[in-house]
Image 1 (cartoon, helix red, strand yellow):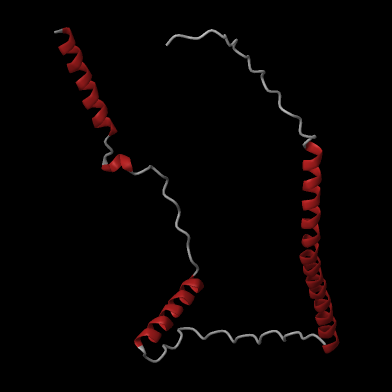
Image 2 (cartoon, rainbow, N blue to C red):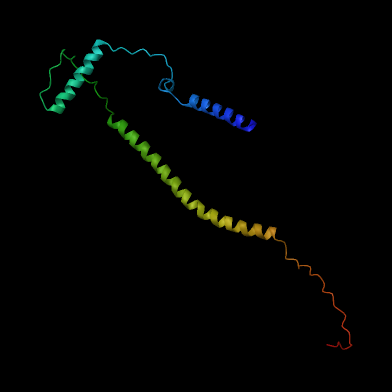
Length: 155
């Protein structure tokens, strides 16, 4: 009886916890303060609307709609600056010099490892010779001789 009462009490607690753990529609949404909407200026809204009209016209294949307001005259693009032929030559020569140095360094690296490998092989042999002293004979345990009797052993 005591055990049955304890089981019933635990089951009630379990159902209570389960009901609290289930999210409801209202509680699943985190409570946030409403954010203020950013306002666009009338000029910006007009630019967006005009761009949309142009996109629509392009997809429909119709004649472009004249803008509601006259577009500003585009300012001419700034004049491009050009390098003088002498400056181009200086830059090209400097770049050729850099690449020549890079290629020379690569050739030096390719040639150097062959020498290093031979050197390493000789140093490895020298290390082995240094580490391994002259071979010493291993000590062998003496074999005890059993006394042999001259008497005949009956089988």
